[in-house]
Image 1 (cartoon, rainbow, N blue to C red):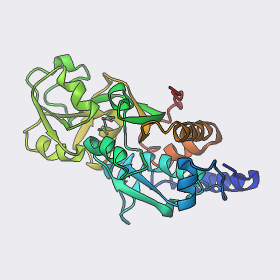
Image 2 (cartoon, rainbow, N blue to C red; image 1 turned 120 degrees about the horizontal axis):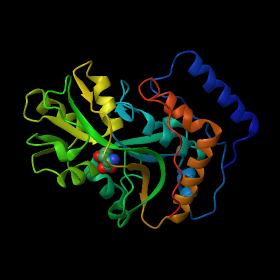
Image 3 (cartoon, rainbow, N blue to C red; image 1 turned 180 degrees about the horizontal axis):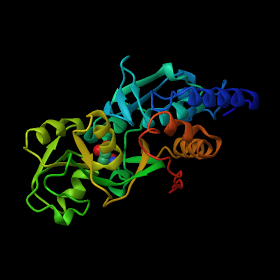
Image 4 (cartoon, rainbow, N blue to C red; image 1 turned 60 degrees about the vertical axis):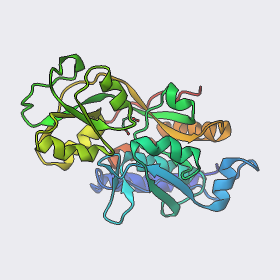
Length: 288
Ligand code: GLU
């Protein structure tokens, strides 16, 4: 990775100007792109840099983290994190190929090579680590509940108090695994946005998943819903990659760590989630 000092200085100035001009909360910024970076032969980094493109799996229906934008390209914090990694490989945002992943196809997409990385509100856990590897975390979310405004069922973030409430969640997510420990009154769908209609129709009383995904859906649906206070799990978000590709994992971890201190990670947050949620502290990378 070789970003010249002068170039990164210019890029950061541009980023600061963007933030000042009120673009925060929009579709993100353009993180700097390394100029002809060099990597050891035979590595995934060298192959991607040579190809000049990377295929990234992300969500297309999750406002603030990964939402398909007006031009078809996704926007959000996950998208910006992927752009930072691509940039370090010398790949400009317009040369990233975005592929929609839903919760349950993230591991298979990595395993069969349909994507090079997954950046998709993807919790690092031991079960998944049996089939894919993770760099990160780059953010830590927590599971909670979205309910109709006014919270008619009095749902709290303590799942032991759910009573007879029916909750909607997504197949293949940790949200589903976690909530199954507390109730059998569950409707499962493919995407979190598919839980909105069941709640509107009264078929479900709540949607349960990570608080930041819920915050995005509240923001998208103008006063119709709210998120209850508190969380009952920890969801460290990682970047999924092929099992056993330790060099690529170390490279992504190095990139994330650098972005935590040089302003790129903060800019990724500010330009996407910034208006809705306070800036968190960057987490500690887990180099397992
Ligand atoms: N972070 C959780 C997971 O990876 C829930 C969000 C999602 O399904 O993307 O399963």
